Length: 137
Image 1 (tube, one colour):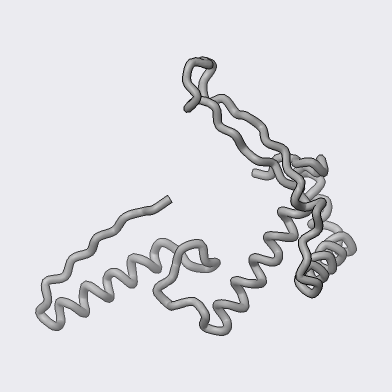
Image 2 (cartoon, one colour; image 1 turned 90 degrees about the vertical axis):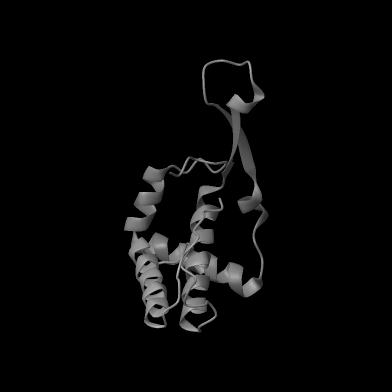
């Protein structure tokens, strides 16, 4: 969810930008300039910190959760740059085939297929095959 940051752009504004071809072209030009100049404007670095309460009680510091609100246009441009980087890394084989986390067009079913392949390959060689899975967040 995009919460307005210091630039006060809301999700509604962002949807309007995405529906206007001229606006999208200008956002892409800004992203291209950031890449070409190897520069990230200071305006995109400004942030607000907001405290969110998980409960109505103020007794424990664990109940206070700070979040950082960044410039919405900066978040959009950062996403465009990230998508491009991922595209080029995948197309140039810089990412190992077994890397599935946070990649576009990689689904949970892909992990299941890979696991089944590993297990069945072990079975054909009469190996005892097992897996250990854990999630690090």
